Image (cartoon, rainbow, N blue to C red; front, side, top):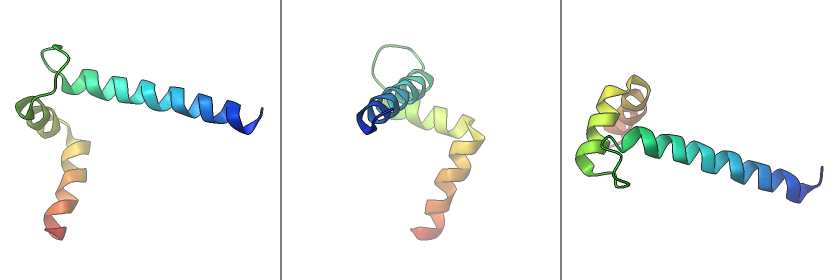
Amino acid sequence: MGRRAHQVEDDRKAREQIDRVFRKLDLNQDGVITIEEFMESCLKDDAITRSLQMFDAVL
């Protein structure tokens, strides 16, 4: 496979991941992620919470 083919596949995988995350964060499925939806989703997900906690030490 050529370099371009790998790039296309990587782009496709990235878009699929973005779509999954968007659907997870868009709690009411209206196509918009509000700050409330973002915060609620992040606080419910232990992995996201742990990831964001590292910024507490930086700030």
